[in-house]
Length: 411
Image 1 (cartoon, rainbow, N blue to C red):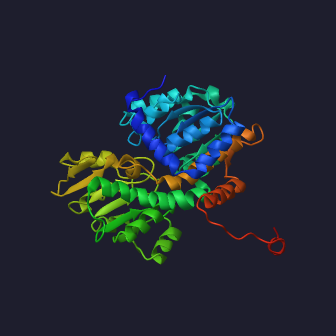
Image 2 (cartoon, rainbow, N blue to C red):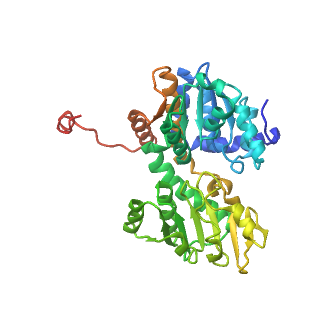
Image 3 (cartoon, rainbow, N blue to C red):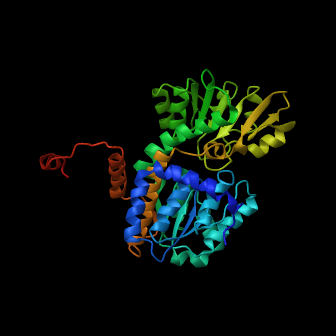
């Protein structure tokens, strides 16, 4: 029995899923292939990913391959209730509601894990943590895990270093066809979609501070520059910092950037990026946002304690009056701004990311008992296959190496 908001919302969710299906030709072709080959016949897949239309379509692609799907979201504010209803109405098991409490969120994770999954598709590591903490009896039945995002990769690498990773875990986030496109172009566009939709303010002419210059930070900074903003980067990695300098951005510590910025976006995957140290330095009217997986980059809890008062300034924007008389604004409780205040990455981008997820899950199913526990990179042939198939859907042809060229290159 699914745990959703309202099954009557299903028609709205169906329209959303139909739209992304139309714009995800790569996943569509994989779904047709899976329907013929049934790579997941007899297998249970537990999935925790931001539950909106593109994720729903991935779930249906996997179900076409014979999988018994058990689905939840990976963030309380990114779940779309109509999409969850559409999946439930179609016969898949879903446990997710928008705006659920932390306790309800954990309960939904548990309901999904209670199936005894064979394959896990995770986004941030919550399924993995729940499995180890509360359902260790199911670990022997897990063929492997596919991790979608940087934060989850960090958690898996730590477990691997400590010798605590009991099965193979494919780092989908680190695939070229994921981080080069999803993290850069997907995050870059969807972050500003969410900010502009929520604030109804212009970006041009403003000072934008981007914390973190990884692939996601590069995308956010690039799009801010394209929208006419003056961009400042804060970093802790000297290599990334000098890269930002070479890309034409100002680089400085957050304490120096805090009095300058009009809009802040944290994209670090770390905690405590904007804290009480910085709150009194912020301009009156400064807007704080986060695009990292967890709502710990802007210390929202400490901001609430530090503020004299707070109020809803606009839907999904909370205003905090500080002791110095200034007011700063936090979007979406400091949660993922592109999903908690928008629809997430464009469908064409997630077409590639979810194609990698689907093919990596198939790889785990096909190599049952052959893979060692621990983290593993996406097999190069999957990365190349996704890139080539995506080019085919776009009508783009490329050159092919001749036998002589292969010989010259030692291939």
